[in-house]
Length: 247
Length: 182
Ligand code: SF4
Ligand code: SF4
Ligand code: SF4
Image 1 (cartoon, protein in one colour):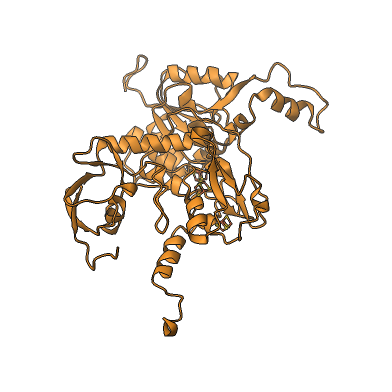
Image 2: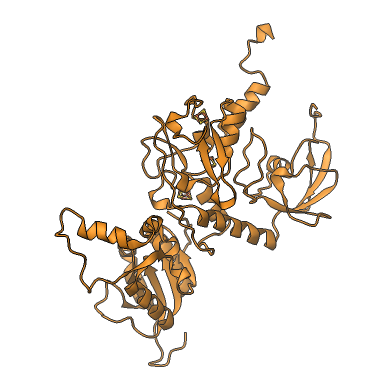
């Protein structure tokens, strides 16, 4: 369904009335209106996953917390994004994410330019309360251009969705269950031996952490480009690369 | 701050180095001439920079560098907690385990110690003698061993961040700087 010219669904977020498009989620309308809801797995340009749960919000009349990224707007919906309880939940969620992997920022390619690290600062996480799991995970450096370090992978599936939906290759997927889940390339072979990989680098661009990186980057040198996907998909939607003459 | 011995008294600050690389203390020394300012407001009663053997009683605040990685660290952690009002995890090793906790990924330390000491080509096949404290099964952040009051992340925390913590604790006027792991 095509979007109406102007947003026409009134929604109230933290006491401010904003106008949403019918296909907006709480996160997308909040973003467009400059209302910050912390999030990690959400990525403009690919489908909704709703896995990290950092964007939980309170929606009036609903009896449980909702992920803002996966909640469709409705007329006169009343949303609260910043209550004390929500902030506490987000903090603990982030601490659990940090405890689940091996995040040693001091020796990480993404140190100083990492979405996870920035979220810790934003949410006031200055220490992690749950016990660290210290999982044993092996780095995959088999790809000629990129490295995958699962120690820093937060299983946000941005790479999975990007490779599948934008590049069309579907190299990455998640194997296992619950806290035994892990990322695999193709049928579980080393990334460098995965025949479906086109070396396009889109997965590396969108990774929010130091898990996917360019080879040869030293501590703090990696810069990701998560906006790449939205840029590509909107350019495709607008037909920007088509020859105007033949359109 | 009330104290049982002499009054009126100055705040007593300690610093201590557990399982760390001394980088956090290097950053402390990087406070440069501000250390003189600190000295005007408080006494530094213990630490690698102070000639004193035992951790003193009645410490107002202690900056703890490093994770709790061996039996010696464990004993000191309990001692410093019992003897200090404010315990500060000083740097990423104390806060998260950081690089010192990387050894936790390979499991029990026995095999690792054997490889480092006995199998290393530069050594003569001997394991360390009894003066070396035993490693704990895992290197742990300080707050997983004793309660901690303040956290000062960073590897190392830059000097301005240390200064912020101390100025706000001691009530000295100053402009604050930001926090971050790494
Ligand atoms: S991925 Fe981010 S949070 Fe994890 S170690 Fe690297 S810089 Fe730190
Ligand atoms: S480089 Fe491209 S094709 Fe290869 S895994 Fe990443 S996104 Fe998929
Ligand atoms: S590799 Fe990066 S993008 Fe992929 S799931 Fe892990 S953290 Fe997310």
